[in-house]
Image (cartoon, rainbow, N blue to C red; front, side, top):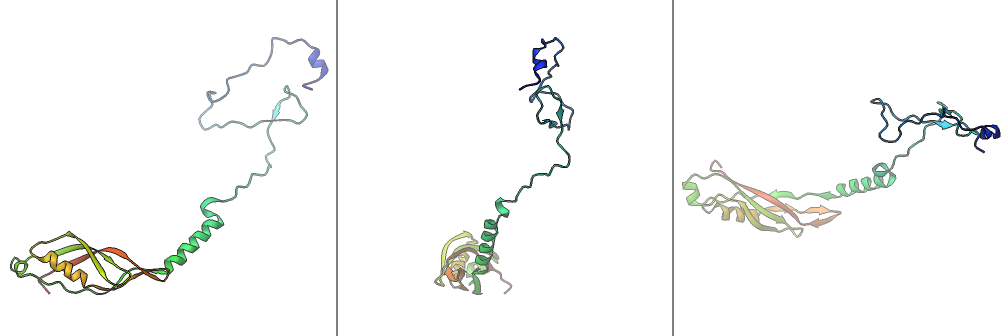
Length: 173
């Protein structure tokens, strides 16, 4: 079974091969990896180890995950969906009215107004994010409420879309 019958009859000698350290703590030179040894077929433990043949075929790893067919199908669906959607298109943005106080003080700048462009075609002003004061914030809200637009679309249906409208006040009109 494990060697010949003659070898089993001989007494063990003190010249047994030395076994070195093994496992993770075995010292190896930097860059050296573990060597792969395969015992020859039909041999016992005392037979020398041999390396596998060099012409051995390498295993083939199939691509999977994000490059799989289901990932490609999902990507194609996203592209079709993006082609079937559009953003809000501003058709008309009214010029805001200056207040007498702001004109006298020569105030210029932008008022930022958070709005929702509803799928129904109306503008809903939520709040003033950055204002200029002196009545210009109220004038910006009025101007934003009068914006005309084409609603955003997703898969052929008009949908609500939030945005920040920049209402510019300039005396050089």
